[in-house]
Each structure stands twice: as C-alpha cells, then as structure tokens.
Image (cartoon, rainbow, N blue to C red; front, top):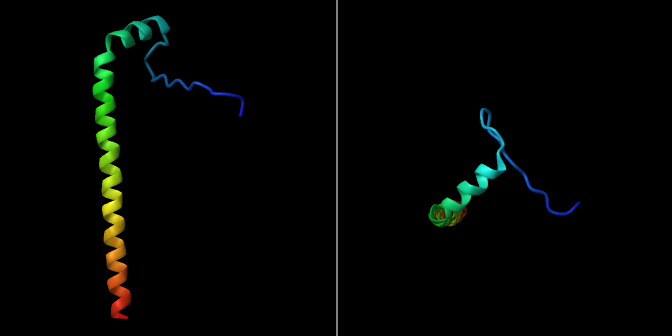
Length: 68
C-alpha cells in the first residue's frame, strides 16, 4: 500500500473546517479519555459475551453428540 492514509468522514450539512476541529479537539481532551474508557468497556463486554456464547455452543454440541 502507499503508506498510511487518513480517512475523514464529513456528514451532510457540516462544513470541513480544520481550524475549528483543532480548537475543539484541544478543549475535549478529558472527554476523549472518558470515550476511550467507554469504548474499552464496550469492546471488552463484546469479547466476554462472545466467549460465553462459544462456551455455551461447545457444551450444547457436546451434549448432542453424547446423546447420539
């Protein structure tokens, strides 16, 4: 690939203003940490749920094969 590329998502009705985004991002440093925590907790919950489902499926299939 040709190096790292930055992808920008611009929603309809919003203007692309890099100076406003820079000023806004500097003011939101604390909420960014909170957002990181929320994302981390959410992804951790998804991983935990997936592992639980996988274990449940394994138990179910094992019991089905033992009955047969």
